[in-house]
Image 1: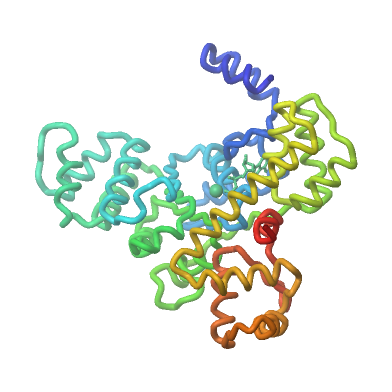
Image 2: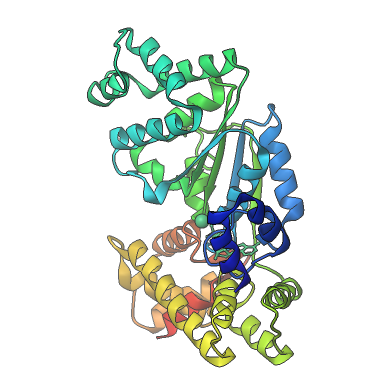
Length: 383
Ligand SMILES: Nc1ncnc2c1ncn2[C@@H]1O[C@H](COP(=O)(O)OP(=O)(O)O)[C@@H](O)[C@H]1O
Ligand SMILES: [Mg+2]
């Protein structure tokens, strides 16, 4: 296939990379996208995000949206296009459960971006000790927890300012950092260090809002101005266009009936459409491809739900979700159904269940109707 050929050639020749990668778009690659031409229908959003990334008066950008609607892809592409030094942390892959470990990891990654000499300078300044050999300062930080991360950022900012440089710190799935209270250092960065800019992204919208202080006046990031971008499901027309263009890239076509079935079963979630297209690119027939996506997708959606249900009232939460998925989608009706099934639920409990499900983006509410936005989670609940 073309994309595979281009990958091979990239390793052999830089000249080929330019020609081939700019000629061939590839919507149906499964990894989050990193190149603008591979990102469907987002040119305008990418361009605005890039201009915000370059605008020194914008200190914080939030990207939120349902799982698999393209947040990471948008973030990757805009960071690349911004031509500003950046550091992106996928919080899920970092030691987000341990503050010291996380800070260590962060500093090492900043070092990779800004270079060792600058970090050595920063660490030397804050440690106040002039140690001569490589990496000793980093070790000093790692072993001596008395050096606060805030001094590190303060000194880093001073050094960047002296060099007239900016650094973007992007945290993907940032809400996970609430466990280690990393919102405090982020608020300090926002308030004090003008050479550092924050980009925070997350799927669990309510938690993200909580993390950035949208809901709580006591939260460290409360009241800070930010640009907010939301990734959404595609409208049927857009989803159908995405599939058509993706197939054209593969030099294949798909029938209107096939498009109709994909939209019916996968809705406008671009991540599921991409997975379907990827199977088709491997010469798997329509029905089988769709079956594979729904099967694998429901499994994944179920796994995400499982980790949410741990340490929660599993029976009650599952029941609320199932009721909504079956169309019992208003507060009073859900409450009635609980009574019908001989399960007592107080108003406060039901409010809490719904609020939590919304916070984690398993449920959406367009007053007064609740819904489960991911069709493959609906399917998983029916099994
Ligand atoms: N605009 C887009 N064009 C093409 N593929 C996309 C687009 N947005 C997302 N994808 C694909 O969908 C899947 C999910 O995207 P991702 O960026 O990981 O979403 P999120 O971070 O919101 O969960 C990936 O396979 C990605 O390549
Ligand atoms: Mg993501």
